[in-house]
Amino acid sequence: MTHALRGRTAIVGIGEAAIPLMPPGSTPIDAMALAAMAALADAGLTLTEVDGVFAAGLQVFMPTLSLAEYLGLRPRYSDGTQIGGGAFLTHLNHAQAAIHAGLCDIALIVYGSTQRSAGNRFASHAEPNPYEQPYRVPGPVAAYALIAGRHMHEFGTTPEQLAEIAVAARQWARLTPGAVTQGPLTIADVLAARRIAEPFGLLDCCLVTDGAGAVVVTASDRARDLQRDPVYVLGAGEAVSHRGIAQMPDLTTTAARESGARAFAAAGLAPADIDVLQLYDAFTINPILFLEDLGFCAKGEGGAFVAGGALAPGGRLPVNTNGGGLSYCHPGMYGIFTIIESVRQLRGGLGARQVANAELALAHAPGGYMSSQSTAIFGTAATL
Amino acid sequence: MAEENTVSDETLSPRAYFERSCAAGNLVFQRDAATGRAVFPPRVVAPVSGATLAWEVSAGSGTVHATTTVHSRSGDAYNIALIDLDEGFRMMARVDETAPHDVRIGLRVRLRMQRDGEDFFPVFVPSGEVR
Image 1: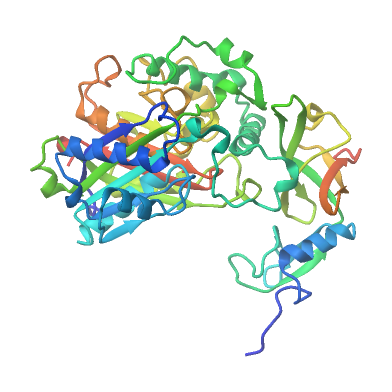
Image 2: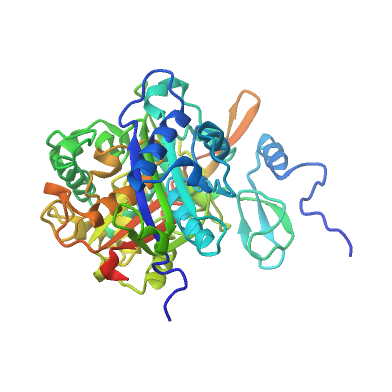
């Protein structure tokens, strides 16, 4: 039986702003507003038509309220679910349900950050974990390093295989206008970079930039009357497994197994159907785990799967075709950009980085310390 | 229905009880009264079962489950590890008295309560056990 929400909503507008840097003194809401206006212009819609607002952030405590005030929105539906970097894919899941239920018509999902320009003034409203505080945890990198070390221990994954992720991302970024880092990069460069939290060096870690992204979602019937070809939401899934890294049930298996299975079931599709993937790469281990847990290869075989430039342009599976968080941009939370690049690939016309005949795209992002997982599958009109 | 205390000292929060125990040299955890499962970090009700919890003192012996060497901006390198205590719970901690690079998955460790001013917190040291 076809899932009730399959193809009922579509992305009709996308927008980015503030990459890589906002002017001094800018606020995250400034960045969010720029991306929101770009997405509405892309859709051919106006602010007064927006009646659903979805947002999350690290710097802003109540971003849906702040953005609504700033832009003069009067939403009848809002959702500030904060489950980390993948929140925006979960917002999309919630938005499709809200639209289908008639709770809103035009949903605006927005993220914006001044993480880089704020520099030392960057303040997160995340609460400290008293059971981790004594150990000088340097942010998420240590948690993901523990995961990577465990994957290497259990499955023989190598530093070179981790480096493949960064090198493939850079090769895609070199084909992507506006990507923040575009210089040549080799596996040897990644391995020689300054160590941060082993096994990660600097080039195993995502960029630190400003940036904002926004997408506009509406019912498919309405979408067909708008100016851009709709990119349909075929399925979405979310899952939560823990908060702190010490409580992750299994360091080498993420809840992407659950979110992915839910998204594939809703879409009525399997991994072999997917033409292009955006897998949130905050650290190089991430895409390896997601390829395993989403079913693109067996558990433990992710390292071998990505070797030999398999994810790079011309490889066996196009992943992170804008350069990802490692090379395109990374303003604190990257999830919204996995939606935006999926839409771009399915609209087509991307030149050198365009995946030929792309009809089905998958976006996936974690949140926290692999704590939440959010997956969405998109298709062109031909896939309905 | 009779009310049941979920901590052994009803005047202390789970966090305060944990801190007071650390100051006395004890690493405490909780056990689910219904399933016998070890629970950490401390809380007011058992996960999944919703049962009451009873405090226990750990023997302090465990095994490194995962480890990383962190390089700080000031140049020093230090360890962060996840330790599986023999009672069946996992916690973040640090392994001292050995170089960060020598902390390996599977290393047997024992508790050494660390003092930092007024604060006490658990760290571990290699136990010398082979297993």
